Length: 151
Image 1 (spheres, helix red, strand yellow):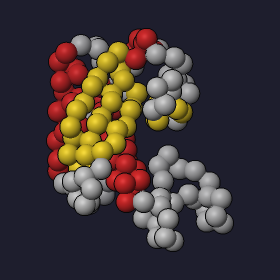
Image 2: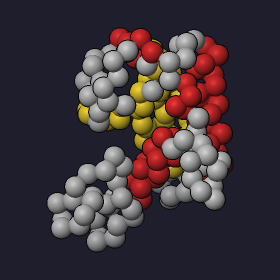
Image 3: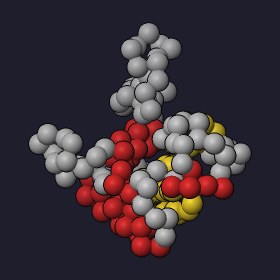
């Protein structure tokens, strides 16, 4: 990078540059970090911004069926539309995560995809895998990326 940093990476990592925490070097990394931060913040937990975040934690241990998946998708789309106008959600895929391997936190899976999971989930049959494809519309190249959350 050109020496410009945009913010703190999420999940938090130690810095190897002498800073306390690792910082994002590119605008696309910052958008990805902000998106994860938005999705994993409980709605009502921020002072002066009570509508910031999502209600995704309320869907833990809910039935893994069509109505629950539709509510999760609507929650994600509404929050991103309100708080991240430069991000366009192109696709959300929600599946049962019980077919996947053991949850290990942040890792690279077999398809060379980055995954951020809630570690130490003992009841995998209650875990939904949410893949969110998005496009950054506020930059000149309209770059695309994705995130995967296990909730």
